[in-house]
Length: 164
Image (tube, one colour):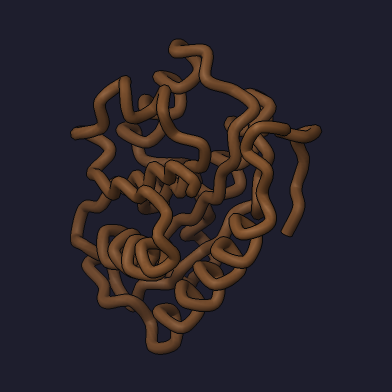
């Protein structure tokens, strides 16, 4: 069993919706999953987690301030060499940018083993909803995570890097 901390920041509910889909799919495989708003995560949850799923909206090509603070808290707690997957929600236009790549680089610098370089989910407008087909992308990504987690030996972490 893997201890999964599924953390999201959401302004209009789109990122929360994705986090809830991850929760649903990861719970099915009997992993210990805690899904929480980034503002509500206690330090002991961070310390106990083996695997992090982090998602937030893109704000000016960057993670939300609360998610950036959360990743800084991981650093301050000296949590490293864990596993993570990151995603963001953003508009589909030339100027929207993406936060997930920056989040992945921040965690990689903490020697996290990243399961992706960042995934983006498109919202139709500032307030949403998610674009048609994005939920299917979440389900496919969650299935890849479940498959990967099935083969993990949590007692013997290996060299950080991108694996999916």
